[in-house]
Length: 272
Ligand SMILES: Nc1nc2c(ncn2[C@@H]2O[C@H](COP(=O)(O)OP(=O)(O)O)[C@@H](O)[C@H]2O)c(=O)[nH]1
Ligand SMILES: [Mg+2]
Image 1 (cartoon, helix red, strand yellow):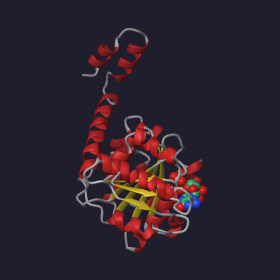
Image 2: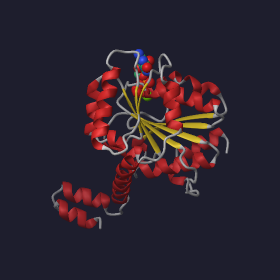
Image 3: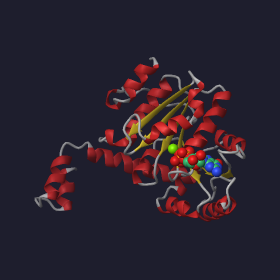
Image 4: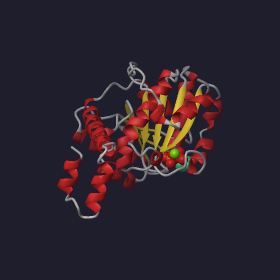
């Protein structure tokens, strides 16, 4: 499959024939965090290191609203300088609104296809910090949460339950004031809630400080138990939601509820 064929297959995930399950220990890194914390810049750094290690890296940028090409993501793509590194990098942006039947199963098929086609690492970068983002994250083997020096974003991540899903936390922009303090607060919060807290790494995608540490930590991540349970929970909820969305009576149940024919309980009955 050449790049063009691969891109075409990815834009029509329904058609991807489910291949054999992934067997490698892990190859899918989910990168999440509030807009502007530096996810794309960090992904660029990680990709650069992985390329030096001989990996073939595919990047899926998941945005709930952006069209498949163009828009803000084109800016991201430009910024990711390693994307120009040639044959061993593949970049694709995906609008989640084009996946009405559910994000995780489609994304999971895309990832399986990429792995089958010889991409040894897949990075899924998500935008925002909402519920749909958690769903996206359920597809990844390992989750990198990116934070910045502003404490407000961290509170958002805690509220949305993303902090407990993280296998590793990068506090980016450590060249700026306040990053140390945020890293300390996150460590405290993780120590309080988990037996095996996720590592917290200070770094700067701008100056390169701490990047080596971060990539080493990512490469050597073992499967942490706390996030595994939180992720299993998200996977199950996502699968359940998709069952409903794809149920033949779903449209009728929604309509019936909206025009008063059904109560919520009766609408649920239609989806059994
Ligand atoms: N000072 C500083 N700025 C950074 C750093 N990393 C990224 N930025 C800047 O933060 C902005 C957002 O970065 P981007 O990677 O697009 O964030 P994303 O929305 O999380 O993907 C850009 O203007 C970057 O130049 C960093 O380590 N230090
Ligand atoms: Mg980005």
